[in-house]
Amino acid sequence: MSPGVAIYPGSFDPVTNGHLDLIERGTKTFGRLIVAVLRNADKQPLFTVDERVDMLRQVTRGFPMVEVDEFEGLLVDFARRRGATVILRGIRAISDYEYELQMALMNRKLEPGLETVFMIPAEAYSFLSSRVVRQLADLGGRLTGLVPPIVEQKLRERLK
Ligand code: PNS
Image 1 (cartoon, rainbow, N blue to C red):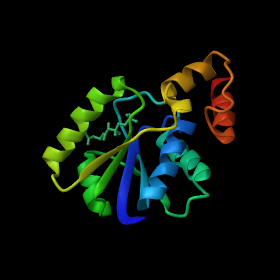
Image 2 (tube, helix red, strand yellow):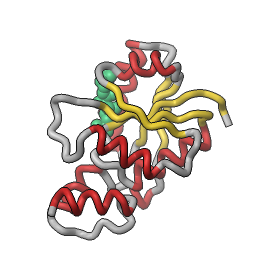
Image 3 (cartoon, protein in one colour):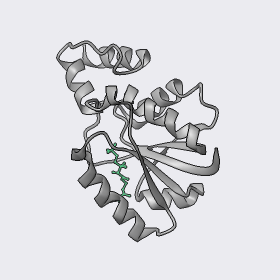
């Protein structure tokens, strides 16, 4: 296990089993993993940042090397403040690649010492996203196996 600090940034609105799969993979590769929720004034989220952080903390309780935090502004500034040397991102399909490449190269331009590492989640989650989960919950679809039980409960409460 490498002792490095990695940041896994995202919106996590809400955290899915695909995110959790990546977090678990990250814990096997990095000494410390900071899951960082973006505080983004532009978006209209379903859950507040506090709610998303709270759900993430509950579902990552079993991983002592995982910390959940939030950030505002540039990711590279947050990474510098937290002493991270790696940004961890998941790539599900080719369609993710273009956006991820653009973001990774921009972050490299801003902070050449920060390396973006891509991991591929289990193929069972390759179709899964927070957006799809929100839509499914809104339309009354089954969420079993797609999100942790506490997230399913929160979604049902929010959308009933
Ligand atoms: O889960 P998401 O919405 O795909 O995550 C996107 C995120 C939070 C990783 C990205 O929007 C981000 O890092 N935003 C912070 C602003 C920033 O640093 N932008 C410069 C890179 S292009």
